[in-house]
Image 1 (spheres, rainbow, N blue to C red):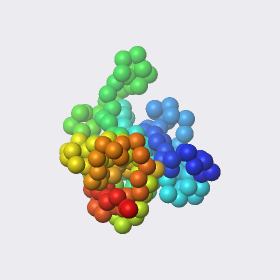
Image 2 (cartoon, helix red, strand yellow; image 1 turned 90 degrees about the horizontal axis):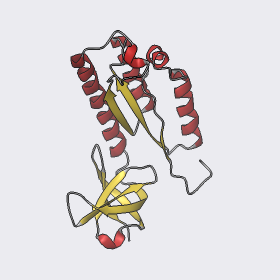
Image 3 (cartoon, rainbow, N blue to C red; image 1 turned 180 degrees about the horizontal axis):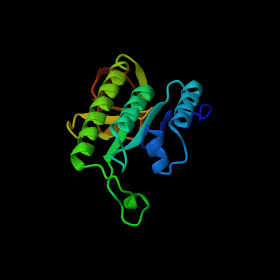
Image 4 (tube, one colour; image 1 turned 135 degrees about the vertical axis):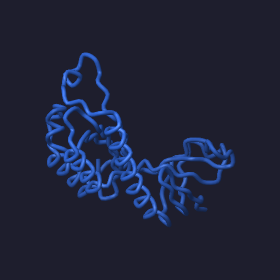
Length: 190
């Protein structure tokens, strides 16, 4: 990946939980330490890589300590994005047979705390990108302003900047001028 120009510096690496107990109950086949080791190797080989993940809260048997392990891993890794969900049983799966269901209000509160932490991490990371220049693949007209386009950096960061339909499908160099939680704002470099 590090040696291939055609491969972008972004990886989606689902972790599901930061608790070894819960990972075992999920039958994930890896530990938190193994996952962290993969992340460390990836960042050593490709320092500019961005990393997104999937996380489930409220899996049967998840205690507050297990959830805190997940929050700690999220903080340690510093994900660039996370697809977060409350556990819901899927008929026909082993997990659906597990006892120790977590009440919806507890799962919902844990999800809220996880999202809050992830948003704070993401905003801090995005703010550190202000003033940097990125090659951006323009994907289309901005959903909020027809005088702007949006595209993605090689690290899969969304960046919005002034432009028209003629830029769609092109690679453009853009300097970031502002950061939000979910997107960057930029100006086209001449």
